[in-house]
Length: 494
Image (cartoon, rainbow, N blue to C red; front, top):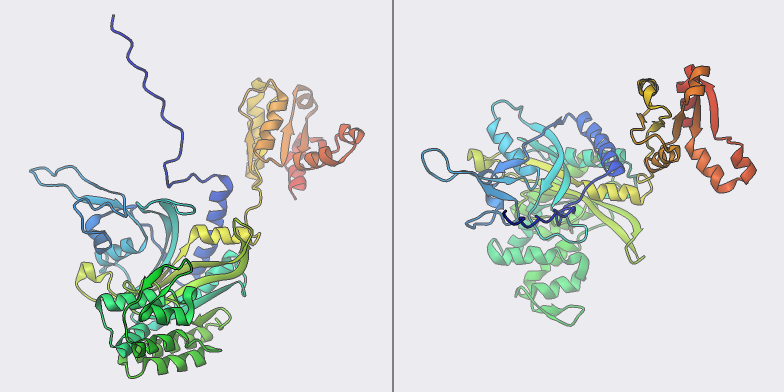
């Protein structure tokens, strides 16, 4: 007789590293928030689009590193060999919602209207090292206009973003959309005599540190370098002091209002034609937002905004929440950015060889939901269903009839499916489900044509606060005629 084979170890019941599970309120509240945002997008004439979660690596293209196995940053795999020989296609889970849009815009260019306005919401996947608050799967919510070179499209996106944030629950005064333009930065680089290549990239990275190190820190980093807070030496870009002047003029050009900021920017870009064009586009966006009723308390020109500038080709924008929250150490800090985007005119061209202008914005779904919870606008305990308890297994049809009547009246309800012998366990189950009401009908009640309706919320309150005599009086439990079941439950829920 063969020896018993070694038992296979049981699989671990744990979520893979960098992923998480979403339960009840997380799913419900996210859907409520996204539904509100979708209402705003829909009113602006944008159409919903759902693309495949999987794209070819070729379609994802330049965003992947040039390696033999292109799965750094994405979850990718190679299909089996094709019949007749030859390697199969490389496929990957989408890492954002913009790359699939570019493919769709190229693939269906003869069928889609131009410009094409679309919004998309769904999960994306990134094969990156996870960390606190950093997951490999997360939700995005995008809105884009493909096929319009007019800055009116950029202004429309900014105005629509303001409306979406407010309709989701963020009040005016608690957010600010800040707008800049890549062309203005290109003009600054021209004025510095630094155009393209590593020097330009180094300058842009330094500009992005303005909020952290300030004017003098940026000047040092652009020239000879500086010491950080720890005393470590940080190498400078190596520019001459006079070359740094246009950058400082640009970064300090924020004025008391948009008109003052634009005037300062015109001076900063000097004779640069590209820079002057960027400033004029910002002026047009400012005027159009004002015409839409989006004032400078909601959206403002801000030269300090720098967003992935190798990707964007024109206006860029970022939505920042300005209210304070407490961090994990109890310190006050501003909530920060929850959305960003801009104009990207080179993405669809990869497929068609023709220039196709586009602009769009992406909302960080998890961050915005966290912000709404921090403001107390979401995150309360979700109410569970009414639970119809089971006193007699042979009368399950009667219990399901009660649940069906409640559902038909728009009331969430379910029948208890565990072992009915221990009635206390049924009420414990209802408590765990956060049920507001329990329905009870034994044989005697059925013969008399009545039901017991137990207000579980009131019952818990009485148990915590009332005397023993008051608790025994059962004021939270009412007997009503079977025909009045729905009306009584409605009264309690109301």
